Image (cartoon, rainbow, N blue to C red; front, side, top):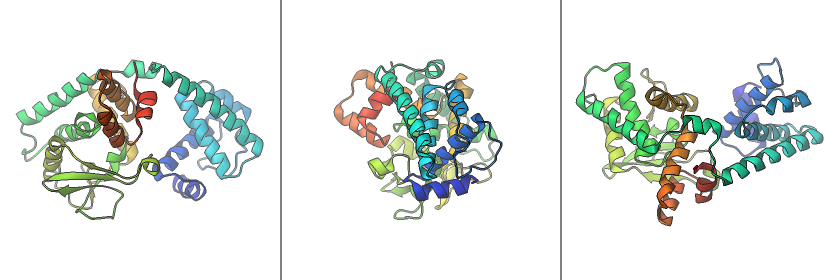
Length: 314
């Protein structure tokens, strides 16, 4: 199965979103490479799952092992793999999952997190620095802009969505489409409403657990978005985030775009997951009210328990 065939197949067997099925696809492809399988397509069997694979997995980080094993178990069940192989993979997955939970309870940073961690104040300072550069050079009104200028305008909007004005989401922003109010043509949208903007997320990793997110954008973020839409002439039906040639960002492109902001500024490898952890660690540092914790967890589409156990680090 190629990527599209795999996703279509898995959705007929399991309840998972496009993004989750895509993650499973890449995880299975990685497992096949570890198993030294020379095949560009994923077979509908698990004959390639042998003891050698588990030995190769042992050298990976806990989180990577957990994610790969979870995908393997899901795939094995979907193709009706041998009972003993499913039991073996499930047992290995539960052992690793318990180790991850045990580490999360201590709120200890992983070596990778420790190497790339920065204080939240530095991210706020970065936003201010980019905003000042935009004002000084009047980039919103400048007739002709360079690729660097375009990235600067995009940077402030991305940072606005990822912590400066809203608690940082995952990669849902990659699929945000500008629509007229009331449009149901796309699952993740932004539309004008009463002088501002409203964001609706109907398709995400956790929608089936927490339902649709309807979020009015803070006024500061709404102002930046309005300038962005006008500057790049984004019409209803078009993605908010797109390349200079008008090609919508994929989740993978958007993920790399977020990482590039922090790599260029701090030479750190900070993706959306680590960004959420940095944000929440700072947020919970001063013991916020229950109402604020609930509101933040809702916007981030998880629970307070998930915030404290999976993201907050010391």
